Amino acid sequence: MKRRTILKYGAAGLTAFAFNQVSASAASGDDPVLQRLYRDALTEGGGLVVWAGGSVPNQEDRTRQAFMTAFPGIDTTIKVRYSTEHSALIDRQLALGGLEPDVVQLQTLYDFDHWKSQNALLQYRPPGAAAVFKQYRDPDDTFIGISAQSFGRVVNTAALPEADRPRDAVDFLAPAFRDKIVVPDPTADDAVLFAFYLVTQKYGLTFMERFMEQRPLIVANSPTTNAILAAGERTVSLANVASLAPGPVQYLAPRTDQFMSWPRTAAIFRTARHPAAAKLYLAWQLSAERQSTVLQWTTRRDVTVPAGPITGYNTPLNGFRDFIRNRAAVERYRALITTFIHPGS
Image (cartoon, rainbow, N blue to C red; front, side, top):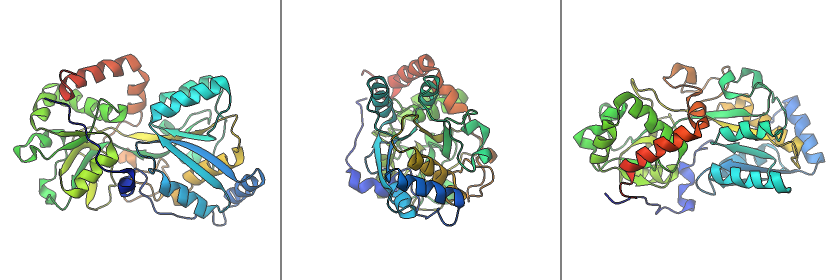
C-alpha cells in the first residue's frame, strides 16, 4: 500500500478546526490578582511571546485575540510550530543565548522535565493552581496543565445517525466504515501514536491489520482531519481532537475502551523578557472563566464544564506523560506501527 498523506487545505481554511476553539472572553474583570499582573505587564513594556505546539500557524489566533481583548496594550505574539521543532530551537537558544519565548506550551511533556532539570523554568504558582489535578502540575510549580484534551473518536454528525456512530475502536472495523475513516498520521505525532498504542494494548496487533484493510486516509495533522470530516469526504476518525459539544464535527468518548488524553502544559522561562506578562498569561489561562471555555476538559477540579470532570472518563491522567518519557519504547512502537501505516517505507 502506498503512503497516503495529504494536506490540501490551506492554513486559512483551518481556523474553525484549530485545537483552541474557544470564544474570546475578558477574564480580567475585577480580579485583583489579574489586574495587578496586568499593571505590572504594562509597566514592563506591554509585550509577550508565547511559543505553542501545533500544526498550522493560525492555530492559536483565537487565544491571542482573546488575551489581547482581555488585556489591551499587551502586544502578544503566539508562534505555532510542531512541539519538537520548538523544543529543539529552545535548547539551542538556552545554550547559545537570545531566548525568544517568555512562555512555552507544548505537547512534548518530557521537555518540561528536561528544562526543569536545567533550572531553566521559573517557579510560579498561578491563582487557581491548587485546584488543578495533581497529575497536571509540577509539585515545584515550574509547569502546569492549562487544559486537557484527547485524540479520540470524532465523527461527522450529519452523515451518521447517533446509533451508527462508532465509539470503541472495534466499531471502526465494520464494513460500513470502509473508505470512510481519516486519521492524522500516528507515526508523525506521539499523541496520536499513544492513541493507537492503547487500542493495540486492548485488541492486539491484529487490530492494525484489520484497520488498514478499511483503507483509512492518513493525513498530515488534526486540522486537516477535521476539515475533511466537515466536508463529508470521510465521516469518522479513530484518533483526532474536536469539541465534545454537539456540532457538525464532534468528539465521542468510547463506551469501554481506555483512551488517551493529555494536559496542554505551559511554563515560563527564568530568563523571560516579559515575566509579568508571562505570569498574567498563565493566571488568565487558569482563571475559572477561561477554564469554563476549554475545548474539551478543564484541568481544575473546581470548574464545571459541559463534558464533566475528566476524572469521570476512562483515561489515564498520567498515561501519555509516562508513555512519551520512555523514548526508546516510543521509537520501537513507532517503527512497529510504521510497518502497517507505511509498509515498504
